[in-house]
Image 1 (tube, rainbow, N blue to C red):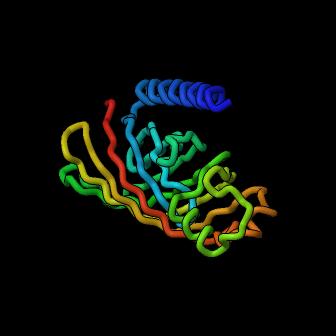
Image 2: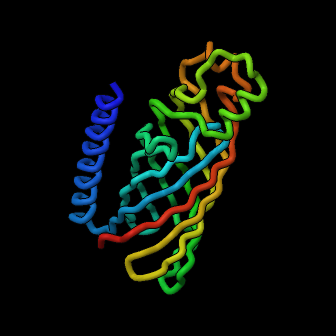
Length: 198
């Protein structure tokens, strides 16, 4: 059963990579720059941190990207995320640039973080919920600011902090028995590396 699940996840990731490659080709055909990279994100949603494999394009001061969420726990493909950023300071001669961003993430099956699992077990040791294997469906949106640092002609990194909210979809019966709130405001932290393709 686990092998079938892993194979299904691999097929989903392959489809996303194919879509990302297509979007990159479209971006290259237009008068804009495109890039690929990886983003590590964590928020106050109580879920395991995600590493998003992403692709994006930048047109003038605007930047858009799409990524596949892969949770650190079990290297689990859990959903998708997309971001939009507007560069507030975009001086071509400067290696550091500041942007305002909005990030939206949808997880169709996400594991709890190990910290959340430990806290739930300490607060309610008598609970019959299997927190280790619990999968939740969530949607979240955060906005904030990011600092982008250009290291070489093609390589750059970014450091983002934001504030927003998350909502757990369904699982009301389970959420009502947990210390973790089903819907709440949360802090968002993210770091990543981007490689320019054009």
